[in-house]
Amino acid sequence: MSWEDVRVLTRLVRGQPRTGSHAQRLEAFYAPQATRYDAFRERLLHGRAELIDWMDPPPGARVVELGGGTGRNLDFLGPRLQGLASFELVDLCPALLARARTRARGLPNVRIVEADATTYTPAQPVDLVYFSYSLTMIPDWRGALDNALAMLKPGGTLGVADFYVSEPDPHPGLARHSPLSRWFWPHWFGHDGVHPNPEHLPSLRRQLPRHRLLEGFGRVPYLAGFRVPYYVFVGHRPEATTR
Image (tube, rainbow, N blue to C red; front, side, top):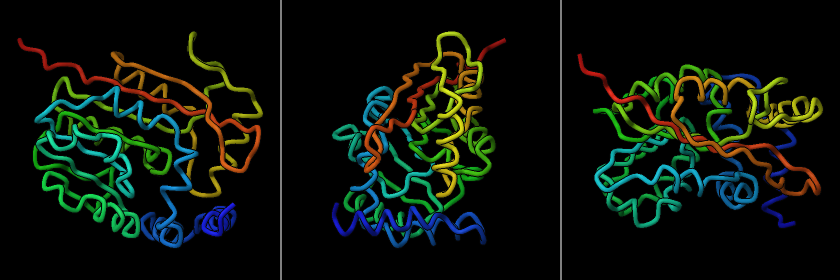
């Protein structure tokens, strides 16, 4: 274990502050670990490459990432990034956004925005909007989803990759997590302001019936034998109807 990992783990053990605005709590928690943020979470945040590949934004697309943090997902886009008409990365944490601005240097079609995912409005409707391990960190997650859908063009794509726990009695064909798992992970992550929620996935499936879904379990750094449930979801807003 490196000294940098020890510093990150210390912040995780101490948890996110309980006072101040959401933006203030994020900055207090993530600023001390910003330089090590990506390296540590590379082993924890599973399914991000699959999310980007499934969405596969075409040339000329307008894309928004809500809760984009350090901009790590720009790397998963690879050569596709240069062909986009625009990419807007939205986050509330200045320390993480500073890392994103460094990563986006020299990319004229990338815009880094300090704003709230529940209220941010792009200048025009977009083709694709996504959350990568950010929906569980947004207190008003319903408002964030509604805002994401509102900014999408008819037929546009919404993607999510995140931690979750299943409902006690999930829809047939979906994963069913044990009572221990459904208790443990919300308590484990909640200390750090991350809230795996059994309502997220049903809400996404209900609002976007045409979708693709992966449910899986991923390794957790320094917790040998533990596997955290996560999902990758890509859905499509219905096309506009004509009368």
